[in-house]
Image 1 (tube, helix red, strand yellow):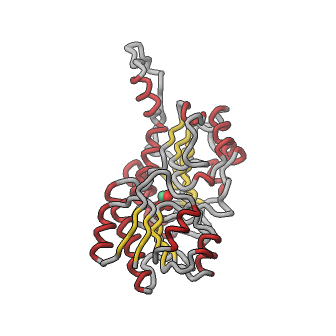
Image 2: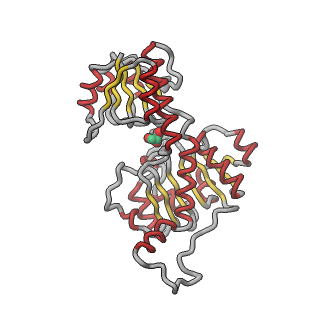
Image 3: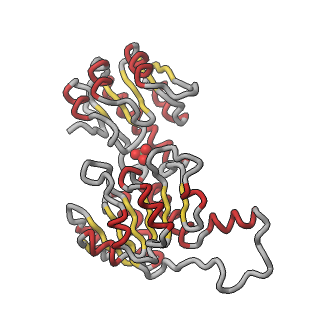
Amino acid sequence: MKVFINKVIPEIGFKLLDEAGIAYTVWKEKPILDRGQAIQFCKGHDAFLSVGQAGLDADFFRECKHLKVVALHSVGFDGIDIKAATENGVPVGNTPNVLNKATAETALLLMLTVARKALYLHNKIKQGEWGASQQPTQDLGIDLAGKTLGIVGLGRIGTELAKIVTQSWGMKILYHNRTTNAEAEKELGAKKVSMDELLAGSDVVSVHTALTSETKGMFGMEQFKKMKPSAIFINTARGGVHKEDELIEALQQQIIWGAGLDVTNPEPMSKDNPLLEMENAVVFPHIGSATKETRDKMSTCAVENIIAGLKGDPLPYPVNP
Ligand code: DGY
């Protein structure tokens, strides 16, 4: 039994594979493999541990139906043709839960960085502009304590964020979901509202929904115009949920106050993107789960899926319905 791994995963993952007596090939080179190459490699292997979702479409699963498991090194599976995987008998697994706190912390970091213009001011120091002449009215940010956070998609990650901001800063929570999050309502005082109420009533709007046909392009000018002019937009979910051109326009026209993105559309973002030059915008390169502890746990989950799949057992973290 042999696994193909398309990037270098944390050491713990290799250790677990060694302990289980499973051989592997790791693609350590640049550039990243294209779909055709990934198919060729997978043909000589029994399982695929995939960092990223590129190329996992219907053709891939048709060509690689011999695979006993595809283990993603991520929670998201929006880019994968799960229907085709299921039709071709390939179990797909992901890494749920273990990255909830790290991703919530990333959203928090974006909120604070935007609210206090931290990156912009840091860059001003680098340009020698920490002037003694700084006025008390200059470079002011906005308070978050006591304000209202609107969470679009109050699931596992959104709830972690809600816990931090309600408990530490007394923020109030509005949320928009298809289902009711009774626990968050009881424990955190979260209030379920319509999308329009959330947009109008929130000082910060944070997106934590999966990318689906329903959420694709959910945030555009129409939504930004319904937000407060003092509001901040945060997206740590998927770049496809917002329309980037309209977000840029909304910031340029001061329709909203600021934005923080850990996800962009496309990724990677071009270095010429106007968001990178704006005082009230901050962009991270999709680092939601990028902590040592979290990536170790993700590797562990992915390898647990591989081990189960190779044995023909149900995956511990399955994605197929
Ligand atoms: C995830 O795990 O889905 C992260 O967003 C990385 O893609």
